Image (cartoon, rainbow, N blue to C red; front, side, top):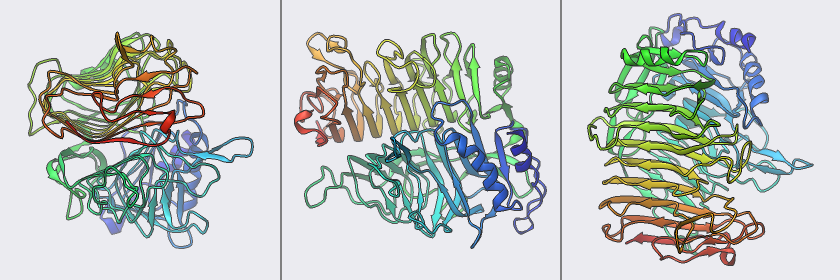
Length: 601
């Protein structure tokens, strides 16, 4: 890969039309490749395809990459730039605006095909990849994929600040054989043409402009999206599409991003807080916010000593984690307010000896983004802890942000952690979180990759968008703070309880709720929340409720809830009630049919 990196960095010369002078990038390490418009299409495709060929099916591999494009135009009529994005690969533009980088062609994610004749083609495992901060002018292909940008993905594969012109956006790869299933996804701050949802079982689009939406499967949520379909929940025969549509997002903060200014200097831009917003942050001019020069960052590599990282943070440096696996014998400590921790190319933090991987002090305005937390072989009490209990030192006008922060218990390697994420601070925004106790891969089993709870929220006024939490062994989400809100929740209960007695919340209470709001909570809002069951051990396993909340919550605290039994052929048991003993059951008797509650209480 060093040869490919030299190829990518060889051509960072001036671009007169943009007023850029020669840009000398910082040392981001061997797995960050920076492309320039002066490079030929074939040069770029050779470098990227070498990575894509490794990464397309490398679900639990160790290699990580960031592919960054300097401002300018790539590809042209007759010579389009066509790229595929595989596992642990970030593709991003380096402009101040998404329109500063234009790719004439495609940047796609396709189905993976399995079976003896490669006829079982799905996107259910297309995780851990991202696309951001550029324009894709769809052109160049002449086959089935000619008319659309293909982004057939599932969890942990965000699209942010993307401008799609010249064609549609499809979230399903309809050009392969087989079922073509996809499961989940997240789009924010983007401008697109018509979106073909296809087989996407659930999806969240936030603060974007779209040219329409084709259909729905189980749970499609739109928050602050111009062009979104109107509210339609539950679906009816006349309109079978389940849409939860909020005209505005209550409080948002877009993800920080790396960019190059007109003088050729690298910076990180930090978008400003927005309240009651809709549409993109950049439609009518530059995104409001502030820039941080790259010299204010400690640029870490996996070989760096933990002490050096923590010393830099303590001195007031921000932190960039470059691609790779970080084996940690203690926590990374984020101590100062407004610190930015930016991951490039899915850097992965793994505790070595049962320690916490990262702690954040109870200070306002911290931004964590683009990080993957793996559990280690020795059980950790928690992987990421934000704030200290009951400190209440946060600032509602400067909330902390976790964007594209992902957790994994097992799968890549054997791993254990009691809790993945604990949020103790008030006024935190969670924006695209996937906490996953692995259901396949290495070290997977009821007593192997043990994990109680994915997310615990103790802080007040915490707002979550795109909360994906799956397969944990007790409450998947435990919400103890007041004034909280969750817009979109996707859950699969654990597949593998060996018996009902091994999976009971209390004597006489079967299973564990996927989302538990503590009895002490007096105010909470939830929109578009789904929980699914598939128990595959050959015995009937039941959950009494998918959602449990105080009956004293105000009317319509929860909105647009659903449960579903996934597979009558191979599954058993089910969910007996949607929320608090009400809403009906989802079992083999009504497999693949959502059971809904419009509002509760």
